[in-house]
Length: 351
Image (cartoon, rainbow, N blue to C red):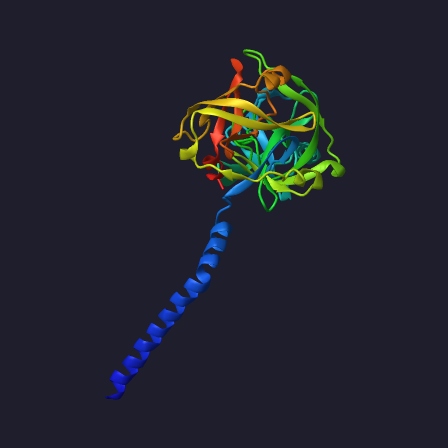
């Protein structure tokens, strides 16, 4: 056998040996490693802990959001708008010259301090960043103005839907959007607080009700932090022992094709008491990106307490056949005993 053929055979059997070792290693260890990777690369769980706890939500926006661009009267009596054609509703101002802008008060202070000098604004607009130069003008009251209405951080009450084994939480079942522009607020940062819910305004036809309460923004009342605002809800991590103690009941997640019209229930904590209330799933729209389920409140006790579904209950987990099937999201304004839910499969789509 010549040297060339011998080298080829050695290489061939070496490669074959490596392949056998790889196959054996996968058989012995690969399945566990594969399962671990599957969990690491997808936040999906097989089981979660339903909660149904109203909580205070504080969402910090990435910069200052522009609500509208408007004219104002300057010192000469002229109607002007220095920002016209440069800054649009839904834009986020993230920098004033080289200074990062964190909130509305800061931006207003910088404008007044700058006076009439030209400003270079960094603006986040529809996932793009642009820079615009704007020169403020004095209004008739002697204050410098850019001709924009702005808004920053958002606060509200919503319901924690569930906790995962590693203490992540999900809430709302819909994204947090600006009330004027309808756009999803640009934020992946915020805090979750204990909410003091002291009453409820019952819903009526044409007038949505709501949970009546307050949020004390003290460090001692923090129960977690928000890490993501998506179209289908908010995610974060809970670290408060008072909430983690609610991980008492682990339930399996139902896939969309397991959800059927008929009897179901929602979990909601009212007056400090966790309780399941009877509902009926009236309709299921599997293909819809949101509002996949139409539901009806059937529980007379909940109807007596709240009139049905009220603002602040968004996030209540929906269960059927001992599985969590979705999340309560909206009320039907014309009839508060009816509302909408999102299928559990949908809440991971934006992650």
